[in-house]
Image (cartoon, rainbow, N blue to C red; front, top):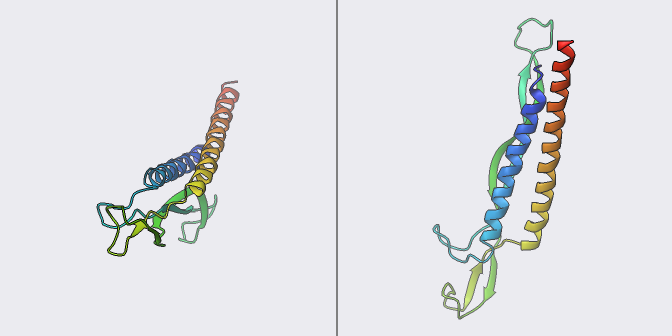
Amino acid sequence: MSVFNGLEINASGLALERLKLDTISTNIANVNTTHTAEGGAYKSKTVQFGESLKNAQAAGESNTGVGSQMSYGVKVTGISQDNTDKVEYDPTNADADQNGYVHMSNVNLSDQMVNMIQTMRTYEANTSAAESNKDILKKALEISKS
């Protein structure tokens, strides 16, 4: 186990939260998009993630290939798309069908704002933890100099 594992874990969390903020901001920017390049209305996207595990060998164990797994932060497993349809009646819209219905973006602005606040707070918590890790490493260096 390295002394930098804590910083690596913080870095993975910061990268995840940055991607989540990018995805949320894209959702918000497309809240009223009824026609995309792929065709159809914009569909809300969500970042999927999981624990990042690495094989680790305990001190003193022989290299038998049977090691334990240790957590090294988080990893992005994908970006999912919500395919639910939202249809509104608006015959004046250029994207309306022959009956006057428009397929609207399924982005819920309120949910996206809540997700953004939560993601920003998580990002700030990861930043604080990274600063604490740096302070601990600095103190360890000062102790080793003595």
